[in-house]
Length: 174
Image (cartoon, rainbow, N blue to C red; front, side, top):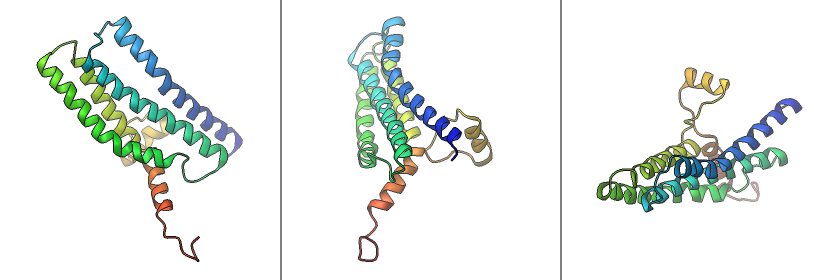
């Protein structure tokens, strides 16, 4: 990778990380402050799930930036991301069940926004840990048109980490 494209990639990774983190207070301010959605247990639960995945996403982009800067392989913090991938599933499930229960017992503004946040958190989890759902660059859109959905970047990094951490250590393979 030449210097210009490398600096462009680093700039993109930094902006992705900062945007994920900026979205936490920005979305809270927009939806709870400006729009005025009520701060209820269901809405906070959904928002909390949303924040969890945004912070994980920011962590991934920072780790990817560190990996690029140091040339290390596998991804720094891959073990933690692997744990997050597994832990998110029950957290998202329990959170959505709680929000659904609140939506049934108290439908409306006190629960539906929380459900929307929770469902968006599930989509973000899929986007980071399984299948890329965000296609925001020309190269991404070309790939989508010609090959369809692609495995998420973090999922591919975790595959590399998993393969490298489970290679049997022998005298010929230290």
